[in-house]
Image (cartoon, rainbow over all chains, first blue to last red; front, side):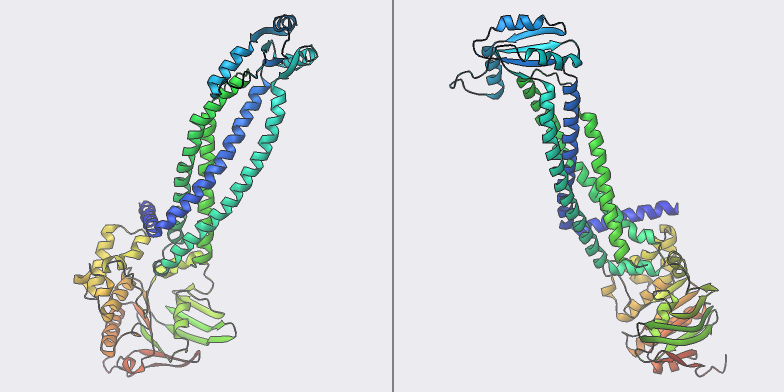
Length: 291
Length: 226
């Protein structure tokens, strides 16, 4: 019962401390939210790219772009004769251009730059590369677009963006720790008389430090909940739209839903926010509150 | 109750207390007098472990204060009440909440707090000012609140560090009388003051400090009825 009363009073003291901090709360939560959103964004980006890898690795389709004047039908027949090929679809340039314009809103003034395209399906994922190797020397073929080729490009982009994102997150995290430490330090200084009275009547150390640490935890929790909003928006609108746009360019069958991943990312953001903030508060109280 | 054995305290090269030894019995009222810088406040701070002695041994109720680990200090302080020259009242809290503040931190129930704070306010004759704020009270009344806060836990020892330093002589005598009445209830009271004149009016034991040394330990004007 006594412990429950003390916990309740720590929460009340935390409320007082938050109320006292005023605009400082806004500042800390803003910068922490940006930091966590960026951190979560890096994790989300990494997770999405990872899923794309897995999907690309399992692709059974590739596109063959033909030169102008190539014998589309005879080439399609020739490819479909290959044992590992399951099916060949012909996408005439007029159809491809129509779909492309519908998706990206291009005008028709410049004329149709797209070639006739063949969408080739193989029976097994491991057949894809040998089939591509076999047909790339056929005459009338301009270019072959297939997953492993894209894979290499994505790998480079991922590596650069991931490192950059983590670097910016680290800088923001250091700023956040500094701001939290200064805020808590100011509160400790302004409440020094209360702290002194509590110390001298023999109140336990953790009751004195507790409200400052829970104040830090409050920052971490609130910021994590706000920071997940832009990631949810990105997930729901931008990422889904990107997937459907991608399908227009390449005959890939994406089949992933990263909502579970987002749950995990939120948990990591929450844990990181709470850990960083409570640890900063603890360090400040250890330094400035003498028992 | 209190034992000081060859206690010294240094602040760097400065010797604040020099080889002090004395005992205080339970229920005794003792004045610690001396000019500014004599070491009175240092002696008080050593008792509640705000400072740690450099040499010697201090014990309270057979607890070795000198070697107490920091996690045990709160337990030591719960067994004593401390009164300050500047009252140390929280200006944004009512008198009641000022006295209750520490008790709440100790997890005492609200029912018990009502009972104890009421009792302490009654003892200092300020029960009717429970809902006032410190700045609505006179200096003497504020110090009585400081005393109420010190005794609200019913400690066996009260330490008052220059409790009348900011008060006029008439109010100072009232405060000393109040501390005397607390002592008569069985509480050991240790009071530091630089006011020799007022101390002489009380027939109590006086420790005289000068330059960090204990130069006299005597009972002034013993009462013929004692």
